Image (cartoon, rainbow, N blue to C red; front, side, top):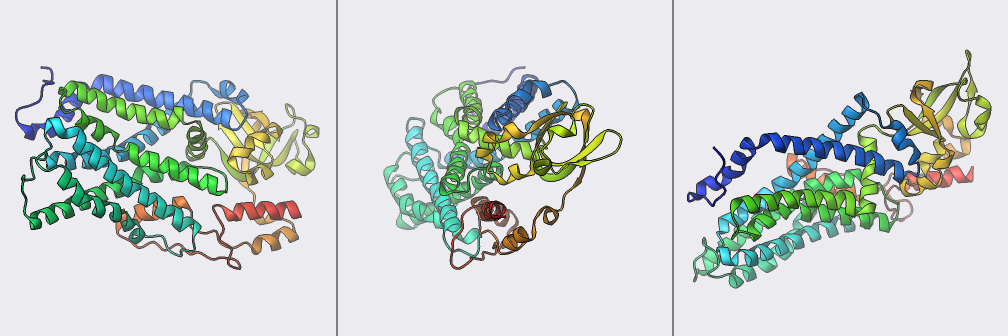
Length: 439
């Protein structure tokens, strides 16, 4: 028996409709998810190879085997995590709208009001993260996040005044006390939604790899804000089309979810590139740890490698050892680069990857990691020792809010400034480049 797509008479059954639909149509839903995971895996691989300026490694590494299967599974889990955290926020937002019981004819107006109020609260959260990153703050904790209550408190009373008679749970002429209680409940619900939006935003912030400038910080926060707003799209689309039947509304919700993912991965090239870098590191496509690699000299003569750049050491049995980082490792391809490339910002690495060598995986063996102190001169060691601990970054603030909100623990991130200087993101890395250039 197929699912009845008409609006059920018993409103208590509304919440189970989507579950019944998924149960009866799990076959094509599972196939669609598998296709999206496969597409996301190949697309991430392609975009990452383009981002690092070495598209030649993509097709050579693309082969059916365990590596491709693991890539699909990893991308599928990342997909489920991001969409799952997104749908939690959307579910709470939809529940808030359902509790208010707006009239079908006035649903669009009510949804616009609530979406605007929640977006304002999320914007304040992003501004708090921006201020906490740039200014001299010594802690990043949940208390600062409650500044987002300001726009909610300022607009809740106006919301009920503008929507009198449009809400089924609210009388036409409420008393002052009831109106105050309604404002408090609405502010609490929308603040919870804004805080839940931090979870998908933190996923984006962790994957973001951008320049060590205010522009890079702004890009990270902008992408986080877009993700927070996007987490509301399914609920907004669902309730903005209350006059339509259930099947159309469900299709619109699916379209909003896939459309939002498309915005993140296709129509925003900068976002796609940055997330590809973070995702590549997460699933093991790249390894920026300096390591010793044992290379076969039959296919790759040692004379073709600059000794100063690769720190080559000749070994026995037609093999030699180099110091390198792995910028791309998939299938039968291993792209090794000189170690100084890891000191270059991710967006600028494509300008130097022509120095990297594409190896066949069978001709290279990864050995132990190199201790960072062993690769520094005495002058560099003294210079690095003077570098202070980097301050709170945008991702640290978002992660602090997430951790404290989830676990109710106070997170304190130490901030030490050198002679009053307020360093931005990844200061240690940029100063290390200065040390490396000066010695």
